[in-house]
Image (cartoon, rainbow, N blue to C red; front, side, top):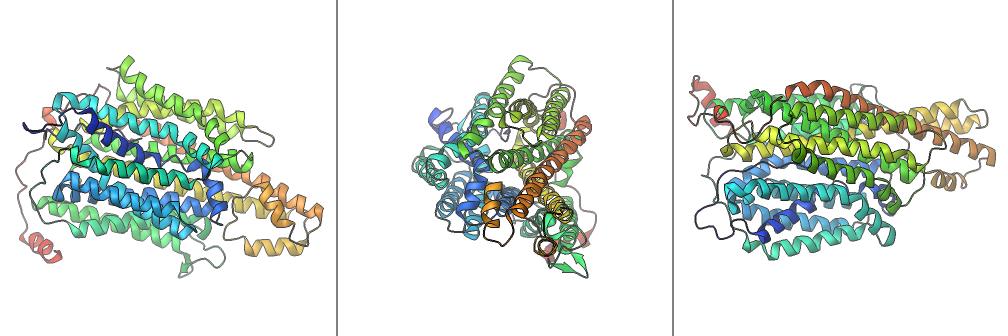
Length: 568
């Protein structure tokens, strides 16, 4: 769920759709569909993996790439909307997204799933989400925008809350593919009524920062993909026959290269801003402590959120063997608590300190995560997740009630589009890193624990142990006891040896899950300390003292201009 900014005052005098509930319903439907994809598939990970003949790690890759594409392209998508018009950008994004949903629905394998879901849907969302912010501003008067953006945010909250139940029910009684076919229908309805939405005029056409766009996509993609593959490739020392350069894992080189490219991006954008040229984003915005603090907390919130949404469904569906609907029902306390907290905090404590509310929310998320780590033990039932899910949901809702206002109020209305783009980038980057890093820790711990276990188990023949050490060193799939038993039945192992392997796998799975959630808890502790970046006084409206000067900065170095012109 992404809180949305209040937008610029773009609704012109002749705007006939100002405050129209029909227009807001269309935009809210778009927000609902965009947010739904981030939660609807988590309860169906095992079902999708089985249907596509792939592994949990493969589905983890698809989930991570979906949020990564959005994170990498969100700022660029917002700039495209500013140049071609927000309604046109919204429509193009819907077509791309709908195409991706259809491709996903008919995907025969993981490659096609990644093409449809991760790439096409991610690109479509990167055009749609920034456009929603401006289109609300273009169709609603300034006085009515708080309620309008509340409706849009509520649509996102409902999607987060309903996603696990929708995905679980459809997967259990039909197929996960129908979720994406349903998205195609919703997208078609929005496109049909799109003409009723008043457009916002395109901004003055300026030279598009193509260099910055390439650098941002390359830097973010390399860094996150390196984290994603760390569990199977290794951080520094390569595992088995995995890719390496000069004897060092490709993970290290990808992350190093990605960070260097991101550094180059910041330098490039700073130079363009210094020269008065249109940057992809203004690095000077990060010097605003309130803005940077809000973005950091957004990223950490979605890191924690995505880590929980990735691990808990695996525990319920793979370890405990629940079907998708049963898994979704076990996540219901989180959904209910999230909605209740997000709505109650601003209503009951409208003048509360954002820092205090966020810290209370993070403490609740930390408590829920710690209880989960302790509760995941051999013989544990599905009921162990109920209270922790409620605590985590309360925390997420508390953060959601504050962080959007924190970032938006850091700058005047005229900069809301830029703030919204950075905010969406931070949330999706946090989500992709959360899924990638938590998943890699899960798989790496599982692999190491499993190999250590079978090597020390006398019931397992030594030749089997040696073979497993070679074939599984690059990563063991996260599989259920039933699936592993079925695979072992095809081998020549004795029933005793098969039972020993299953037992070691069961123990390794729980160790991997606990280690992954322990990482989530550590991130929550770090977030508690970093919450000091947030303001202590309520943030409402747009402070005039934070308005930035419209005059372009002075140019001190003619060589800087020449360098930029040469790059363009």
